[in-house]
Image (cartoon, rainbow, N blue to C red; front, side, top):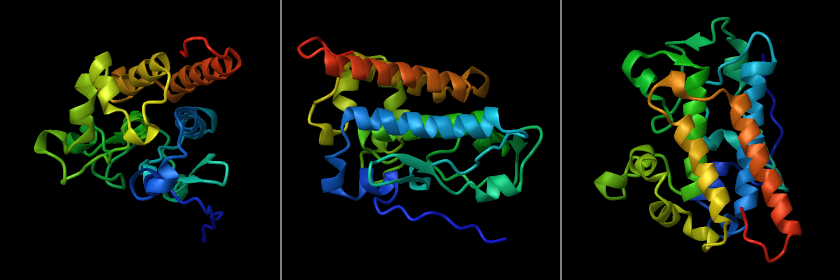
Length: 223
């Protein structure tokens, strides 16, 4: 079998967040939420809509391709699609990269749909902070994005300091806080406490709806 993918000139989300300084400036807060919603819907489709459901197994920002309008497209589904599992669980075939892997995979080698949810939470952290999941160039306490960021997600002051500097402080504080709440749920250490992707989609849809409302209500406090 040959898998053929559409070419996306904008490259991957990883490229834009971590390698292209000029392009990153175009990633406004609303665009970042739109990207998160788009890839959440893709995972929801794999996990909950098609049958049998599919575990992506290699969910990371490098596998999220962006078109000219910065709409996200999830790639590298080929291996997962060619190896569907009826129990939504895989072990030795997982391809997930370090920095995105859920704790249960590190401990047991088992990878499930909830492991994909964890990896999605890591990508949301990338969108929020502009940081890589693992970065050896940073101080030791900040090298792991999840370990550094998750304890601060419910601290408003700390959260504001975590935001990607490329956004230059232009974002609605309430929306940021709700975005962080979703991240915290997705990155729960215990898989049973992570939400299904359908719930994540609903939460992000509400964020997008509020963003649209705030655009129309000029001068009101954004939420």
